[in-house]
Length: 317
Image (cartoon, rainbow, N blue to C red):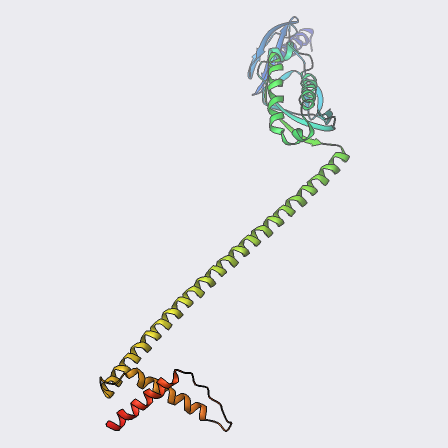
């Protein structure tokens, strides 16, 4: 192999290396910052891009992957998730607890993300931790445990405003775990048990109260119904007795009329009826084997006179 051939081969190899270094392929949803002689030159778009080797250099940035920091020449423009480790925070009522958060953000301006902040992932993590401490410090324990949405909204608003100059858009923040101390957890468990017992006692007493009310209403209704029944029964009995007396009076009137027709108008039929009752009474007194003493009132002479008149009447007939 001659010297000329060796030179040609070397030139070809160098040309291939130069072309390879000059052509940069950027994947979709990624970008790359190019510096020319140490100064910002361009932001490469996805696809094939041509640069000048050695003169143009890609800017190396710090990224986070699976909780580990690493250096990379490309910038991921997709939404990213940072899962921060648990951190200690103190509430307004001096309760220390542990909280960890998830941060969803996206790089919208690669230039600012590279040149406005050094070590972007670490800056976002520290900002999230300090902001979270400030927000939790304004809330009491009960508010912290029941106001996750409020905390998430406040934290996202503060982070989005602070990271705007870094070319970052914070889409949302989620609190994963809120872990109070063991002593607080035990106290909360006892409180919840006491609340459950209280609610159970209240429900039991309410049930007993409703039962007594329903029972008394039932007894009241039964008493009213019985009173109405007694009233109706008394009314019906009185009406029956009245009807019976009317019928009896009508029957007696018919009997008196017949007696009058039988004995004639000259004789008082009342005397006849009175004499009949007197005779029936005397028969009852005479019944039996024991002697009886009968006391007759003074007016009884009239009755005897009536009997005599009836006797004469019957003789005349």
